[in-house]
Amino acid sequence: MQNYPIGTTGKPWGDEEKAEWKAQQIVRRSYQEEVLDKLSNIVPNGFELNQYGALPYDEARYPLYAVLPERIDQNKPSVLVTGGVHGYETSGVQGALQFIETKLSHYAKHFNVIVVPCISPWGYETINRWNPMALDPNRSFFSDSPAPESAQLMKLASDLGVALSLHIDLHETTDTDNSEFRPALAARDGVTHDNWNIPDGFYTVANTPNPQLAFQKAVIDAVKQVTHIAPADENGKIIGADVVSEGVICYDKKALYLCGGMTDAKYVTTTEVYPDSDNATPENCNDAQVAAICAALEFIK
Image 1 (cartoon, one colour):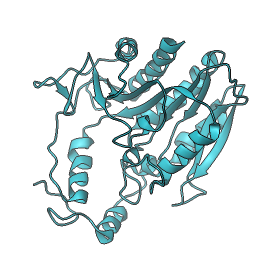
Image 2 (cartoon, helix red, strand yellow; image 1 turned 90 degrees about the vertical axis):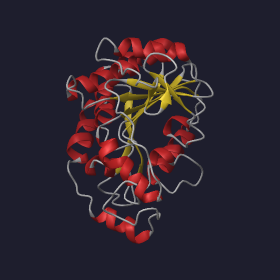
Image 3 (cartoon, one colour; image 1 turned 30 degrees about the vertical axis):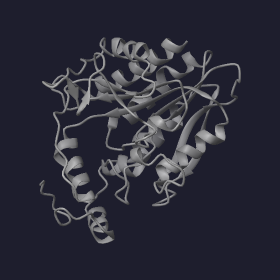
């Protein structure tokens, strides 16, 4: 059994343990300075900043924004780029912002591109996988979701009223997955989790029922120019899942209620950057996310 400082081994958390966990979380960086202030300056011509919600923990502090075309062209394919559903995965957020600033206008003539750069701003500020209720937003994309991060994004997607061709969800796999987040998950649920080897490098997670491996390969090949691709472990796996092609594993995104499963897009991928590599820098991680988005768009163009 893993030891975790909250709760009783083998017993799921109740409200008391969740409150104890929440009380230990502290703000470590500023959503206002690192996300909102940037957004106010980088939205290109032809796009608008749309507030689609706010988190109930502090609506003034945590407004939720998407960058949308001023006019949706029904003759163009529509694309969703999401970041920061796990707030601690920094390049998911900053990579989405970098894409808005440097590449979004280039793709506007081919696509309706919708970018939601920071789905979980409380998680961003506290560098957390969960929200304050000890819920993982990335396991909460289902009807009547108790996670406001997930519920409000699903409502945005529904309100857009467009069929999406592509959804790319930007993530990281970090060393803290083993040191903090998986032990916390095991403690919260009163179970045991085996830690896995944290893969050194970039990989993608395809959708099991519709993996689109040629599309995944195009993303991997583009990111190779920016950073290294994660090798399989000694069992031919990455984070416990079989490697189906270089740097690609599969999850059933709808069955797991993942952000990547919230749409019916034909092309879906989740990026996974490794920021703790000796060979990685924050800039390199952001560049990898942008390269992945651009490769996905080029593939379906």
